[in-house]
Length: 51
Image (cartoon, rainbow, N blue to C red; front, side):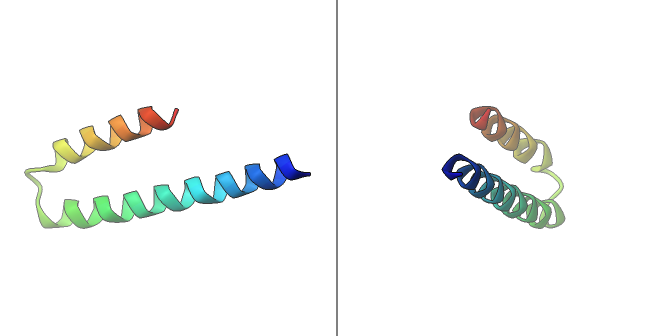
């Protein structure tokens, strides 16, 4: 039962982090198109660390 609750909590936290990152990425993308590739590269590095 404890493992199930921890898995649910981890899933909720992971989805919340993904939502915040995507929201920040949209704001940066709307402000400047020149840095788009740099931000995509940073996000790919962050996702590789989580795996």
